[in-house]
Image 1 (tube, rainbow, N blue to C red):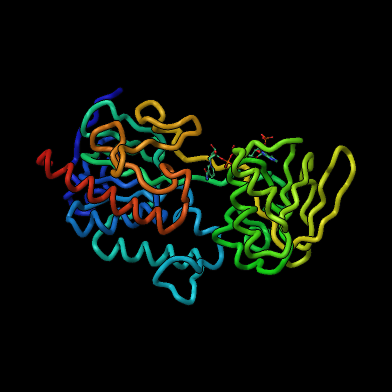
Image 2 (image 1 turned 60 degrees about the vertical axis):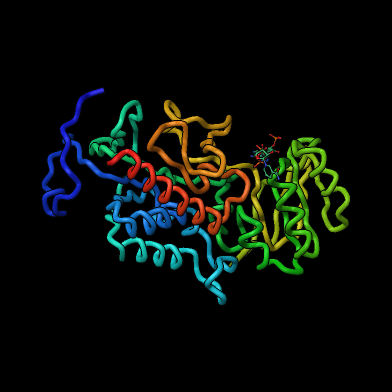
Length: 330
Ligand code: NDP
């Protein structure tokens, strides 16, 4: 790894702009990612005077910018649009002095402190503490019609969007625990829930399968794969393939539950993670196995994956970073 010269982050912004590429910039607290976790970490870190620098990543605002109404985030009794909510998070982080930048972390070197993070393959940041808040992406089937109806019938989050399909028929795609959980959640709201499993068995745990089987308004369709989602303004139905036979169902909601992919690939050489790529944190903390590197939000949470839980772990990460910097005298 090349050695980089260090420029202190306390320099004025105009000086930073004229900084030659390849010359390292030193920051006390670097936040990678701009969903609820990243922005919450930024609010806390900025208020603790850590002078955080936050890189927004490829999808500024994160997954919530792809949803419509958010009705389950406390403090918004009338709901709020996902993109608007993330603008407000950003505004709040900026208000306390977070240096929010457009850029994407392309590689890291966590072998020594300060930790190095490369932005857009060229800019080098040397950070005393790093907060990883890069989130996760829901996997989708890849159909054109799926893209077309994103946010108007197609969803990857029953807890977020299920309410909009109250007393209507919906379909869930997938055969794992997430699909089972999504179907069970929707069964409490919707008239009928189809669960389309591509194989002739489910991968979900036995207990989840039993719950699904014991729920009257869930119908499991084994050996069914999605061919097309149909509709005009929104989803009106789905065409499935069952061993070469076409099956058409009238549904208003199409919930994809075929797994998530945490955005953690660039950290793989340094940070402990599970088989899927979720970052492991030490119990009841945001600490990773690397000193000075913290993780929050969906990149370390395969279970809850909610905006409010992501924000909570973002707060933890900033507090842990602040204490770490204090202990090290950085
Ligand atoms: P999984 O990888 O376990 O399951 C994905 C499911 O989607 C599989 O049934 C798979 O089918 C199916 N699938 C994948 N691609 C397609 C496709 N193109 N078309 C149709 N179906 C497809 O992901 P999960 O998100 O369900 O779970 C991830 C992890 O999180 C697991 O370890 C799970 O146990 C855990 N989890 C635990 C929960 C809990 O304990 N309450 C809740 C949710 C998740 P196939 O089987 O044919 O490959």
